[in-house]
View 1: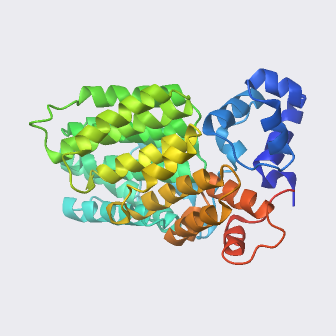
View 2: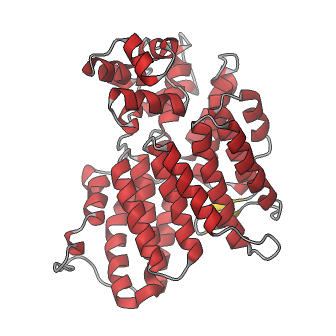
Length: 400
């Protein structure tokens, strides 16, 4: 298998391109020489997000390239991200050009909103290929409907762009994801829904985090949360959902930066807000409630290397509260916690299998799923079920 099949192989290639020794990279990135050697020699195929960001920056590659986040859609290439890119960057947006024949036509607002709901169903169900097929037409129709119906169509247009940003993150096109997030924010600003606009700040924060810009990711989410901070006694459930989700969004980059006390504060405030709910809510296509707080506690604890706390937090997450790929992402975090010390590989494989069951297509787009699968496979002389199914999905055992 080629060196490009693992994080270590890609790191080695990037390091050599920069004409750096492992020692030189260690000094430049501020990362332990042992970690670099373990990655490059295949003893490890994953590392903390903060470590990967430092290595990507030091070697001059994007985080997406280091993690090998690329399109793996179960659709023909003509129905992939290039078509979504062309819709996002349509020449119809250039001054004086306008829409051309074949760009679609305005829809009744109810019909447009139904199409957006279908897109969200595809996304949360992990059907990324189907979403890629839907989005080009949806974006065009939403633009035309916005021109025809005015501010009333701002929300579905903003969400069509938001779906594009989400898809682009999963397929490793982070720059296009940021363009989509910016367009979503602009579309929402033209409407009159403060909470919709705030929700999209959470999307922008997530994109920034995937670009390796943790400080900016935290700032965007925290500023948006402050702008809509509610009076707890008077806040609507929808308001609490959006505000609480922004607090959790800010906690993730704080964990990446290794700031455990700030993570504790974000999650503590979010937990107090979630106390208003008996179960998680899903408003504006974001989720918030007791399980979301526990899920983020698990994730941030895993990022901070607090394995025991991560596993304990996972016990408070209820499957019925989570949308499908949200549950899948949570099980990846649990797998990372179980795999950390090499003593609980069976439990790690079980958690990976639960994530895989959500959507094979979504699973193979997750860098953590690929790296954990290959690391666990590398510890075994013979695989057997279910690990061989996981390996087949992500595309190989990696280097030894």
